[in-house]
Length: 194
Image (cartoon, rainbow, N blue to C red; front, side, top):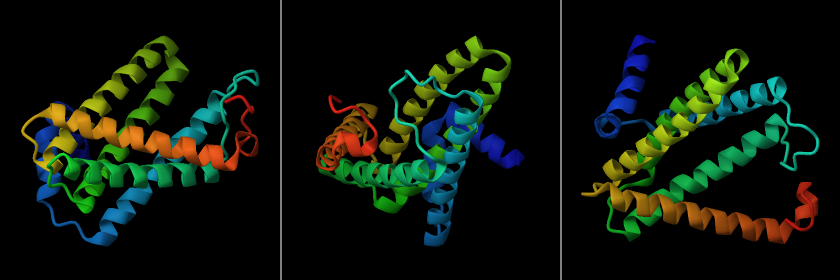
């Protein structure tokens, strides 16, 4: 447990060194996929706890997912995002492979689940401070993601990593909008004018 906490601290302080350490390991395929599924399960648990402890008022028009549906959505979105990070990075001259991106994003998702769990607990005690911590955690996770993508694709600049992340995000957003358009907003429980 101490080793995990020390590595989490290294990831926050020096994400490039943490990424190099992760990439240097020869991860078995089963370990990668088990870790990835664990990260999705933990994020689903945090989402469910947040939903129970802090339910949204009915007038807030945000989709509310059952834990199983949330798990499936996050699983598919994360897989697509990892594939897009790998593909768009190679389009920009990177060398990152799908397994290397999977290993890095899995660790980042595990770290994010721990941060989000701590923030949910902080909301019970100090809501204002927890809101600020939530903003800070999102900025830190994005900063780490940029360095992870940079290390995986062996770019010389974090700006190229930013291009990869933006490109992957835009492709994913357009794909989601296309799917929502095909399915129809009403079938997803959304208003027709979304």
